[in-house]
Length: 293
Image (tube, rainbow, N blue to C red):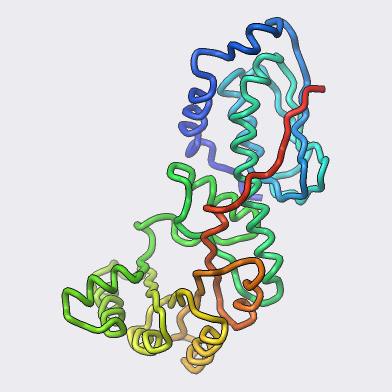
């Protein structure tokens, strides 16, 4: 399993610790002896795919390096309700000081990994990949997209800088500036991108109709994104794509209105990729508790 690059998230973790800890945990300081040591278990309260264990360790290293975290499972493990994920040993005050921050990271990332894995299981055997989007929590993109990978999904572009994706507003702007209808504006945008971007840049174009697809295909994009189409429309688009020689055939992706209830139907229509914004913007946090033993 791929590990989190802790250098990329250390500032985020430090900020989260400061946000919660502030000038100190006045509750624990009021009632818990400074010398008291304790052991606490992290316990899952539902079935899940676990992501973010390394952040528990990083949170406690930030608060008190003498607190030891020992994971009881591997990153990416599929676990049952009641499973102990790991144990913390050290100062009781320090363990409680880091409880909420550590759980916030672990619950959020495990929730994303769990939802992603549910989508991945729904399309198993179809050949379609489940992708995330840029609909992420500001500042958390690296971590949230990491959690998608832990859940078996694939990352779409990380930001505006690593791929060209011509979406509806880009196409509207081209249409307005050149007085073109939407299909020809989409094709023109793809042509302009190919002519101006560095060689080898991945170029995708969003289309909303079968007519737009047919026009855009003349520009040989690397990806065509079918936005908010029905399953029947997607099947027709797949049939059109399959008539193109394999070495010139773009990837076909669907997005918009995808749910656990319909994702299998879209996958069976024959697309290569299915992007699901809900993986990161709507994943419920996993129920995990820290329990002093």
